[in-house]
Length: 632
Image (cartoon, one colour):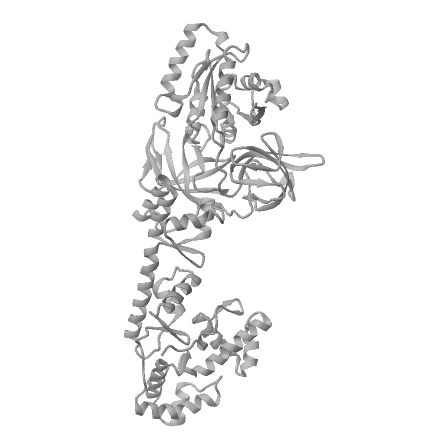
């Protein structure tokens, strides 16, 4: 268990920790000289059951509230210290508010310095404290009247801490490892060491980790967990990690050490924010604030999504833009202070680290954010998938889910996964129906065409859907017999065509002209001139032949025999196998045409989804579709 102190300056937090642990957590010369804490202090006590009780001592001065927030992040138990002579003071109030905002619900109150006052004053301050904590989680915390100076009453507090440590449930170590860095230093013979509280997951000696948001990579050389050498560190422990591959100068408080697989750095996120009831006015839309997250602080602007402002005591959904990237995950807590860092305004919970740039205030989007805030992960994800398909990487990084944790969650909500994207089962079924309906509509408008090119169909049905996911949708419909593939085209199985007798006779006159130069056939106007037939009649005939499937329209008024298209597709595949890609110059040389036509043919392959262009390279995406047997 990790205990964090809280309370006003000079109320005896550090002396009480020393009385409990035997260790003075003030280590800086200035702290010792001035008798006040400036930096975070740490102490550890081995317990009889073999576990370790850790203490984080925080400064009480109003100028060091940002340091207090960094120390309180990740603690399990709060020890609120209030001096009997002063009673409740400004930082007593502010620290208590911060503990609530950080979600710290377990704790105790130490009414210190009872040796300096009489019994009436002790009773008076007891009543003052009771009034202050009423309606907060702290109203359930036991109060111990004691003196850190004389030791009176400390034994009862110690016994309570031991009892709480024994009953404290170990923090779940799900998700990828995350540790908020609060200190960095070097040791001779060891190298760079970072310390902090582990918020999630586990880390082992030898693991590769990332230092974020800098994006540095390092290897864990050794671990101290709860002040003891260990083979691994886990969520809920204070850890010291010796890192190989990074220098002390590259690391600072506020950064995170995380599993290398977790990519969660962002400068924009959606959240739920509560404004303190102690505020006397509302927080205006797009107000500038100090945002404290983990051990970091940054300037931020708060945009209210479900209202115009946030009133005192109100909770609102917001969009947050920070002035520098932070490493965030759903459920992370943060604290907001005013732009001058003079008082605490409120705090919130991270909901979505990759929000949309448009439609942020749509009712369905706000319903998703409310579900993430208020419901179980399964219920929230089910609601989200009803609104949009989710890339698995976005979900895994935003919710800190490992490869083994993601599939059970998807199964629990009945999600359909295609090409790394999750869909609600109903949404996937709807996409299937929309695709089939779109093909029917194109057949009605363009009866002369054999079908619809796959990329064109995706632009009609679901332009935002990744091409790979759309490809799985198509393959599923092909397997079910609801679609057929005719070369580069997708069609309704009932959409068939045959040439009439006169059309067949004319086609037999044209066909040799295309076959004579299969990779560079004449255009419509040239065919019309050679056989002395109107250009319009030739064009219409070739469109009907294309519907039958014997020719393919590759470029404007440029029809190729489908057998020739199949052969050229094989040549593009050969170039990919031999050279890593098909490029215009090499493809031109293989088919023996001019460069302009070679480019048009490769662009056709890109357009129908057979290849994918990356700069000057045309990369094969799937098997030659012109080699797929026609089900007819």
